[in-house]
Image (spheres, helix red, strand yellow):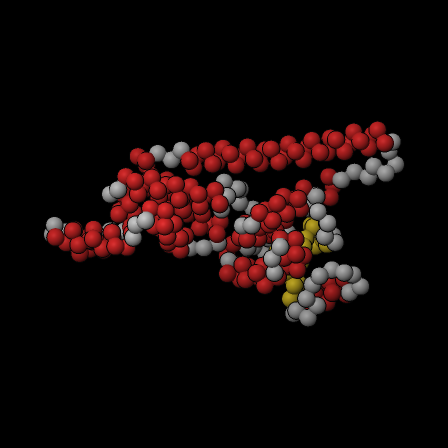
Length: 258
């Protein structure tokens, strides 16, 4: 990784929006839009620092002769902390964003991990390099082990408790996507229909019609939903669970919140 130009704010390493976009392989507008659409998930002083007025003028004066990528005409500037960078990597959800954050976490945000070995003997330098490489490998393996354990938990959902289990997982997926619960569930329904070759809406209409023919109340019919349709078909339950698991793995619901 070509490490970005170091910036510090309030004693912390931070990144500008432009730096973050370049590292994550996206655009500054995408970073800004993700933030604006999910402001409730970001806390000032925790995930970012906002510079305005004199603080912004001082910062721009500091970087005027540097190659730091910023919009020098903006009336405000956001500087993202480690936790803010982590949250943006989750919202983007791309392999590049995830891999780059891992690298940033190990290097850029932890400069104390680095040792100046220029004055040491070649043998000592080699030993330190080997130790650091092994430590980095152990951190990666620990992350993989945590992910494998979490995937195993997801895949082991029992059909006896599929409603509660999938509801809880969908809630976590929605959180990771920065989206609302119903939008996430609707995307899962679409994948279920595509994979199973069914129209859940048609089946829901047919189910409600049967309930009406049986004399069941209008309020009960209105409360009946696509999950109830799925619950009436064992194969649909299996497809639904598989789709929910796939979405959980895609959005890495096992990752700790930053």
